[in-house]
Image: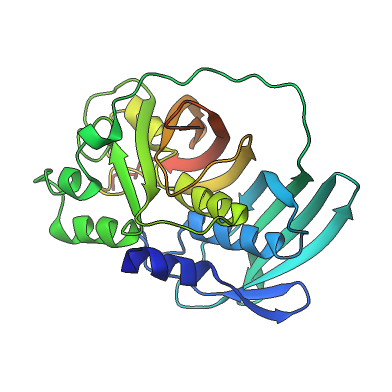
Length: 290
């Protein structure tokens, strides 16, 4: 296991303060606020620790309410909304400086048999044939060295490989609002199903709005031609998967309007099973010229 992955696992190992109350800390991000994937993953950890081990996360719905302060601890308060025969529901509110910064509802289910079908996996190249994240980032001479290092530090726990140029790599001309990345953790994980779900949640916030930027030829936060932040985030966990094995994140944007952009995605295992569906809306604004 890489040192960066162990550091991330330590970050997700919340401190229990009291019954259903947990405390987490933050790490550096590409932007000067708490990374949305981190707070979502930590909130899911908090929820999962109040649920029986035989019930696995099948969905989450979340709102980003305020920018998080990376220099302050985050307190996660868990409400036990429902404990049914098959489903368990939890609500988590993340608090900093006395104010909520994030709210999450998550549902967990016992395993059962049922109808089974899925959308087919789209075509994508073998991840082994693609440049690593570091190789691709360092190939763009227009990116400041400081920006490259911030990206590499923030993503060091994950092997994330773009199929095509990301928005910040080739911008200025609109492209199809479709993006693909392969990802897996930089090291093996334990068999705890919650851990794999939590890490996929963490990574899911890294690139989902890329397709919004592609549609308008914008490079994004790395080059400063848009400003924005995540507004809400929803995930459905369809089938078991491992976050330490390759997952294809197939993303697209059906709409952008009113200063907001919508991204939706499916995540497949390398052998073609549909593991997750993801939808996120974010603020995407073009900076005003003075």
